[in-house]
Length: 155
Image (cartoon, rainbow, N blue to C red; front, side, top):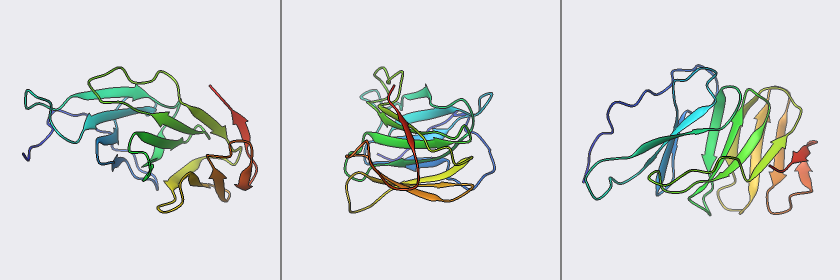
């Protein structure tokens, strides 16, 4: 079945990141809200009633500049923001209650973060680009960054 998801207020922000990403199960996109820290979530397939459920999740205190689904876990979403944080979210079906807080928050202290990307063939590697330099972090080894300097904060 092919169809359009209508009446979605998607954001129209200008920066270097991407504002819509999809895994095999979910679609995440910026929504138009004050501050820009919200993401919309929808399943890739419609529900049993033929309709798509769209929900929102408050991710950051400022504009979400980029997001990336893990190629090894289709429900794991990394987000980065103008608020200078990277957050990892374990998402569920949009018809269910989304997590109220991230599984992990990173505060690299490198200025505005523009791009976040999971490595396509090495599970757990996450690249982040800031206004100052690129950073690499191994999410399976939470205490040891591979490059750059991070301060780590669990929520």
